[in-house]
Image (cartoon, rainbow, N blue to C red; front, side, top):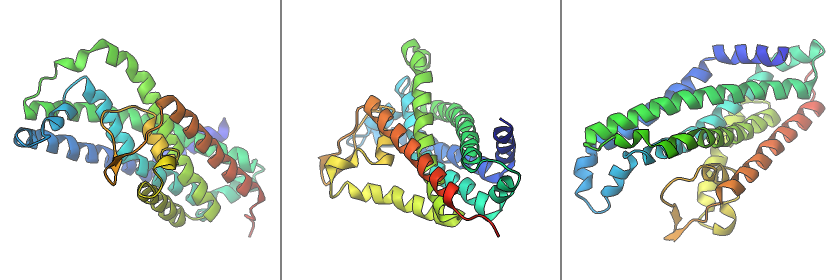
Length: 268
């Protein structure tokens, strides 16, 4: 617990924690305010009605979360990589081991602190996103009467928990890569490369792309619409199956990071 609290305090003071949250909110603002400002013009074009649906409550509650997972997923990878890489480049892991701390335990407590900040960041970004969606709806002349729809509100805690799991898995991937590379820059670079490589993988193997980590993370919260590749709809995992797949990736990433840390040479 002492290591966890110390890690949490350290991460709260890091600029990367606040920059990641700020970027997410700014991106949400750009999306929903732009949609609200242009919705009336787009509504007259073919398929333009779909723009209004993005701003219509109660569906907007899920749309906001979907945008956070889509936009924030890459940021979560970068954040996890930045934190893990700094443990090596700044020598904090070495100092902890010199004090007699267990390597794997220190690693897990550091990641637990990341999960707590991801939960807090998700809640803050979601509240901001809902507010921005409501403003966008007002700009577009769309009614916000659906904001009080009880069934949707009752499902929100589960939806947010699923979203938190998805962000945690993506952060774990960046965390593991940066741990193995012992570098923030390498972890961020490989994480970003894997993120976009998975998008291109859909061109070649539609049958397996749904099981890849980022696609699986995007399927834990069901949202409207479907992606396609080459004119063919992409297969999407059942949300409950996606939760299992995401958990497997998350645990596997931490196990690999822990095994590497136990065997790594950190002296000198």
